[in-house]
Image (cartoon, rainbow, N blue to C red; front, side, top):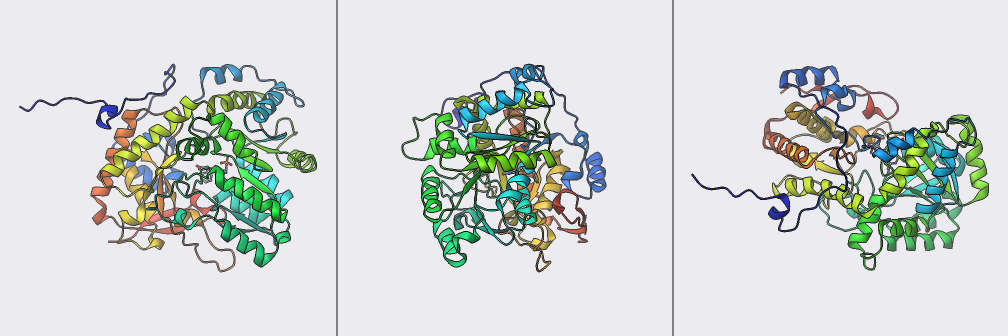
Length: 472
Ligand code: P71
């Protein structure tokens, strides 16, 4: 018998191991299912992972949104909820945290990110204006369009290439933006919509240099610059790691410097900010703030709670401080990267470089036999669930929706299946199980058939669409 020497993960990678800066006080038990149970559950869900019951899921990588584990201090904060209708002390705590870490002057809480997107879009966009941005996000673009705006993608070309190793694939291509301004005129631009670690591009960051130059460009033309800060803390980590001059700066310092180049931000606090529900808008301009806090009372709630309970705002204020700690973000992104390193080493096609919140499997390369209208990424999500009970999310043609003018599908270059890692929830052993399941599905890829959509809702169709397997 050959003797096998066990090695820690760190040893296998030739480095000292790192571990999470927390320990586990309470656990949530998981339910395992049989293949038969999964076949049945998936058929009932119309082969759409959004329609599965979470009890039917083993490892849930649908999203990192609202799925993080709160700390004991955040839970203690929940008991300090001041549920006054007006002027809750938790709102002032939240405002203080946002001023301290993000640096904006005025804050409007919202129930989640899209609530904030709705308000800023309604106020800052005039019908027919353009909204250039670094790749679209589904809810962001929808609210911009509902406000009469026309979204224009001005991200670097590299962002659309899953193989490009550009360190800042989230950057805005300033020449594309200049060309749009030259063609349409600055007054036709509502604002520039900049996102930190671009979700649909694979969690790819924006460099400090890019936002600095973008600010200068916007100033030259008198154009406002608003930030989708949803995963901006993760973006700060990549700047610290990859951009010259930032290695010795803290995540908190980098975050604040970056936000300082923008006129305001909207946020889904369900991601970086480590809460299960919440969002906010923050701006530096008083007049804009007055408009926003007036509109928030129409759609969300009074401007000191915006659709949240006092306790939610307290948990958010505490979560913000925890989220900018260097050790937290290093282990958070380290875990995502660990899964990415395994898959890369095994030759499985994923978007490179690995981003902040998720691994994006390149479904086109899994299934070259499928046309894009046969939903390769949706197919891959279905196969993964069947194999192991892991839930992932389609980020391809189903998510992209239809062109309102022509009625045809949008055909995004990226046809991806996202394995999104919740913060502080799963262990390294869970990542191993995920990696092995992806490999099993990859190894069986040759015989996999595609899907057709048999029910298509009007808005954000991917949430509720139903599919059927194509006959072989
Ligand atoms: C994610 C989500 C949640 C989601 C939203 C839509 C379809 C599927 C899943 C939400 C974001 C986001 C960015 C960059 C704004 C929102 C909306 N992401 N900007 O990735 O990633 O925030 O969900 O709190 O309303 O799973 P909201």
